[in-house]
Length: 230
Ligand code: ADP
Ligand code: MG
Image (cartoon, rainbow, N blue to C red):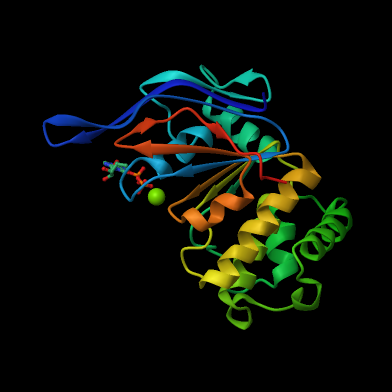
C-alpha cells in the first residue's frame, strides 16, 4: 500500500477541553487509484489530509508512506519525506504573483545551477500534461481560476510523488471547470501511479474515484470500491 493511515486520532485544544477532529481513522490508498473522501464542512477532511501529509502529528495512530512509517521521524526527515514523496494540492492555489506558470512548477525542485535546465524541462512537460503549454509564460493574474488550479496540480507533481493529496480543488471553480480538474487528477493518478486522496463535498466528483469513504464528525467509513472508476 502506498499510503496507509492506521487508527489515527487527532484532537485540537478547545477551551479547557479537546475537540476530537479524527476518531480512530484508518485508510489504505493503493498506487494508481483515487480515493474520494466526502463529508460536510467541519467533519475533519482537511485534518485528515494534514495528518496524511505529515504536517500535523496525530495524538495516536500511524501514517505509512511507501512502506515507511512516519512515527518517530525528525522534523528534517519529515520535510524530506514530504518533498520527495508527497504532492499536496490545497484548496487555494497560492501561486507566487511574480512567477510565470512554468517557474511556479520549476521552483518546486529546489535546484542548484546544474539542475536548473532539467527542472525547466520537467516543469514544461508537466504543464503540457495539465494542458497549459500555451500559458507557460503567463503570471497568475493572466490565468483563469481553472488554469491556476492546473498549475497547482503540476507543481504538486514536480518531484514525482508517491502520494497525491488534494483538498477540495474545485471550490473556487464553476461546475464544468471543476469536473475537468477532477478528471485531470484521475488521469494523472493513473498515468503517474500516485496514491491519491481527493477531498470533496461535491458528489458529482465521485465518478472519477476508485474508492469512496465518508467522514462524519471525525469518523471515517470503510472505503467502498467503485466499479465505474477508470
Ligand atoms: P473540514 O475540512 O471537513 O471542513 P476540518 O478538518 O477543517 O474539517 O475541521 C474539523 C474540526 O476541527 C472542525 O470542528 C474544526 O473547527 C476543527 N479544527 C480544525 N482545525 C483546527 C485548529 N487548528 N484548531 C482547533 N480546531 C480546529
Ligand atoms: Mg477543509
